[in-house]
Length: 497
Image (cartoon, rainbow, N blue to C red):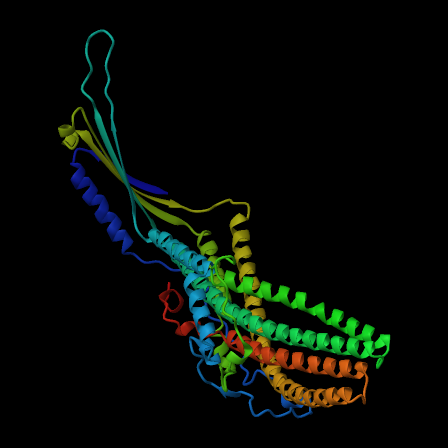
């Protein structure tokens, strides 16, 4: 159904003013938004990350005076890595945040999503176009050229958002922009957590390499001692071969550790946005990291509002809900108002004289009639997509709670390992001292000395890896709790699209 009015005579100014007034009055009209109104899902209502007491192991954990205390309900600091009291780590994280191409890409994606909102919001306003044409005609018989006629045309249109297709489209784009903002937060969290992890890995590998090199130095001394004793006939040839075998075996560990150290350094360089050939990470040392004495632990009820992956999944669910509204609105009629004006003349000063101007106003209604079930299928697809995103949201929430619980359990077991490895290291130190004295006095053989050194090496490496693991699990806890990206002084992270 359509209604139109057209006449010639009034000036273009009057015609355009009348069309604009009609469109403005229509624009003030309201409409309804079909489709569901989004309601954020309710996260699981649990009081603890750990399972009930009756399902846990009954063996009490070992105590460690240096173990951190969990401060339940405390807020995580934005620069949580400073709790390790490593200036090299602080400098590295500042460099990573400032130069990471991953963050730059995430910011660009967010800016792109915000422009998509502006594009969708344009549907709230009328559209207008103007065209102009000038032509000159002549003949080849010496008559000269005729005066150049000029034509100017203008058109305006407005689609009334009766059933909220435009409003739902804007809502969808806003939700997708929220998804991108939380994607930026997730990239920030991955960058800071990954950089801290690589720094700890570098420190751990350097300590393991130092321990391996110390063991090799002991092996070389043992071999020299055995060779001297063999020359004077105090030991058999078998002792020399045993010392040589042990030295060769221990040397095989060094290239592996050096390779792993190179990989960790290269990975950290990439995280901070630097070419591997132009930047070298600091020489991180495990002794330079101080485990926090107190670890802030967010309540389970707050986790769903802190984790960027959960919030991104919620925003995606919101976008899917709005998409249902868009698909539903497309099943209803649409009303469009339009206005056209044209003016022509043989010269420019004749364009807007009465007889040269024509204008028209029209209102049209379009309703879908036969689409072969395509519109209903499109809506049903949107509904199913919403169900998919809702299930994904639930899975992400469960994974988040699992990650926090796993990390808390790891920290508890780290305390037990720390006590055990420290005791093993102290015992192996004392045993090695006694064995060296026994071997020097001829009361034991080289195999016993090598065995004592091997036990000491294993205890030392165990202590190094346990220390590094405690640091890593602490980083994992900060990451699992969301990393306090919401406290960062960055409008792209803490602002709204």
